[in-house]
Length: 94
Image (cartoon, rainbow, N blue to C red):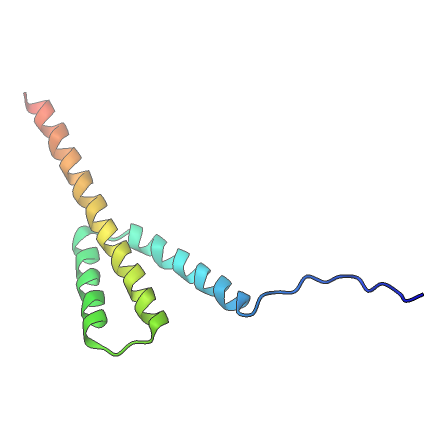
């Protein structure tokens, strides 16, 4: 009889890189959440300029695109917060 070998779980190639990228993504997303409108807008403009001007690898382009989306979303959140504050102020003045 042959001895059964215990099965080991094989990791997919690149799983460490994906985990590191995921952690890095979470970190910059948290940083973006703390930006003011002006900071997020400036970062968005710089990111878009990088996307338009350089020859990029597909992975780098995808990362910049995700950041641009996050900066744009932050700008939208800040604008919505300000709009809500204006509505509340108008309600107090009437």
